Amino acid sequence: MPHVLTAAELPVAELLRRADDWRTRLQANPTPPVQPRAALIALLFYEPSTRTRAAFEQASVLLGYHPLVITAEASSVAKGESLHDTVRTLCAQGVRAIVMRHPQAGAPQAAAQVATAPILNAGDGAHEHPTQAMLDLYTLWRHFGMPDPATRWLTGRKVAIVGDIRHSRVARSNLTLLTQAGAEVWLCAPPTLMPDAPLPNAMLTHDADAAVANADVVMALRLQTERMQQGLLPSLNAYRRDYQINAERLRRAKPECIVMHPGPIQRGIEIDDAVADGAQSRILEQVRNGVYVRAATLAYALGE
Ligand code: NCD
Image 1 (tube, rainbow, N blue to C red):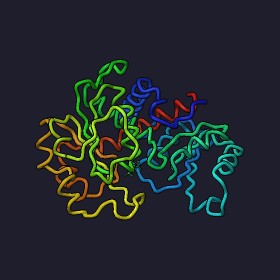
Image 2 (image 1 turned 30 degrees about the vertical axis):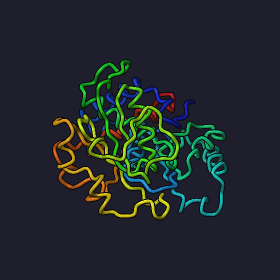
Image 3 (image 1 turned 90 degrees about the vertical axis):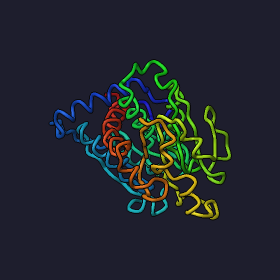
Image 4 (image 1 turned 180 degrees about the vertical axis):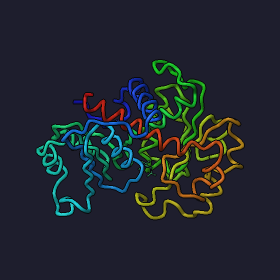
């Protein structure tokens, strides 16, 4: 029973192939017949979510399971139940897996200590978001022509991740998978939004023009104001001027550079409309790929 807690433990090559099988299957028939099972996958969401939650719900349905969505506000968590007791309760009811999003780093690891079903981390604090990194990697793998995943197939490619690195679990999980595949990863943020702890194997910069220069891939990140202490971002206008991914800044990248964003987008702040909706944007493709990757990852965790 493999848990899926961090990007480093993902069987990347296997998941790329399995995700691609889902793409083929769903492109041939977007509503394939499924054999329904009388079993639940719990989606335990202690933080808001649109695309991650919808993708895991769809993945559950595609595998024949019923998704049981539990949000913190509408559950016994609001009555003071501990995470361990919630997880024990769901396992006692026979859920086959628990997909979990939590504001605290390490919460999925804590859940895994008492769970009798696999735990899938759908984002924990500013720590990890393994399936997001996996769907980003899948998007790049398709973009670069599906090279042999056993090789360091991103060697020679520059990926610039620009935005609120400090609070970003997406940046951390992506850094693991991208460097594993050989990419040169630049992490760019204003000084107050750079993490205190060192991030290995990355180029760190406060200069967005330098980060974007000659990049093959630019990934913009949302300002996670819900995680910010006051005063980390003195001026939104200065942030726009210095860090927004817009057409002018993007001209410094390679002409064929693609633009990614895990969503949700805050239009006009970290990215402007012309780029978000432009020809170089892969944002909606990332969303679609999220379904294939979650179906692949859920099946893997279930041992199917
Ligand atoms: C991200 C998250 O929740 O970590 N979104 C997502 O899962 N697609 C990024 C964010 O909230 O900005």
